[in-house]
Amino acid sequence: MAKEEDKIHKIIHHQRTFGEKASDKISELAGSWAFILFLIAFLIIWVLINVYAWIEKLDPYPFMLLNLVLAVFNVILAPIILMSQNRQAQRDRLKFEYDYKINKKAEQEIREIKNLLQKQMKR
Image (tube, rainbow, N blue to C red; front, side):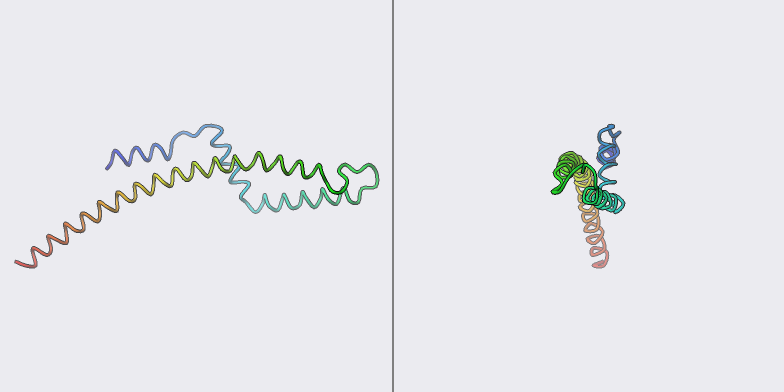
C-alpha cells in the first residue's frame, strides 16, 4: 500500500509545466469575484464611452468590436479553464481510488477484529 501511496503522491504533486501553472492561475483568477467585477466595470465603461462620445466613436452601437473582443476572450479562456479542470479531475480520481482501497482494507481489518471478538466471546 505504501508503494501505491507514493505513486499517487508523485502523480498528484508532480512538477507542473509552465503551461499547467499558467492555466491553473488563469482559472483561479477567472473564477473570482474580482474578475467578474472587473469585467462588469470594463463593459460599463466601454458602453458609456461609446454611447456618450461626441467625436468619432470607437465602437458605435451595436458594439461589434466589443462583441469581437469578448468572443475572442471566451475562445481563449474556455480551453484554459477546461485544461485546469481536467487536471484537477484526474487528481481527484486518483485520490478517490486510493481512499476506496484504504476503506476496503479498513473494512477487511474490522471484519477480522469482529470475528476475533466473537470467537473470544464464545469461549
